[in-house]
Length: 356
Image (tube, rainbow, N blue to C red):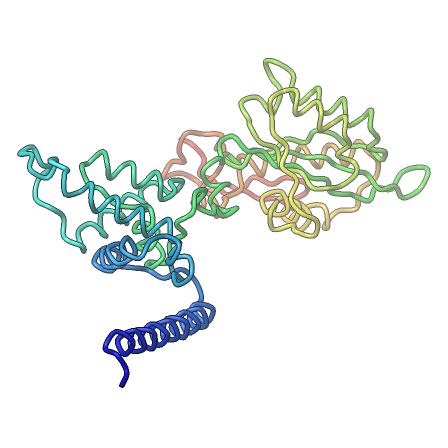
């Protein structure tokens, strides 16, 4: 007959073997499930405490064999924090910061801070909350922001649209471009290049130069004229928009940059990013140049000066509230004889009342 000790040993061995097999099965199953689950598994505080207590009992060696969703070192760190919290007397202090926030109130506060400080990452938000007396982990902040479709990563800078950038800086942005005009001369039909600059905020236009040969030396002199102290057209400007035309050569860009103006070169094939300059080209072509036959360079220059006077003083601009940019008189009288001022043989007209 089998002795009692031998029977117990046999039963114990069988139980140990069964437990080992169960643990092996559970570990394999957990590993499969972990691979199937995408992303980080979020644990509540209660779940962390439960794992921490069990993990401390079985030790780090066993944890390395069975822990799948959290590193063994993290589980034991939770346990140490749990033990430390029992001896933390800060909860007994009387100078607490108001009543504790509810979960919804805390989430609302996180969202408020993140939306009012678009460049802050979640660590910065955690610090701001700590200043207010609220302890919250960066993971919790990140989870809140993710639920509301807000990137929780540092560098969460707002993407400012080109239109918003122009609007915010319109008083210090100038755009420029070339347009061409065909002119009959004694030597034949010649293409002249006209370089103009337009201040975005005021819509004031400056014809910087007219030439059939816009070479590097000509462009360098244009840059010097524009940046001349006292009367240069680019005084007070911070940005200059120009396209990738090779006529805007390196020496031109360097002179502009040395004056303290940042050049902005839109990508190729994107005229909409230099819309104000493109709009002026369309205006002067449709309302003036395309309706005239030009004989000689002097005629071209006179036509350009005349049109600019009309453009600045006599033409209403819808983009500026349908007003005159720089009216010759402070205000037009409401009574008096209606007169029509004509320029370029009646091509350009301006209706006004004759002052008494």
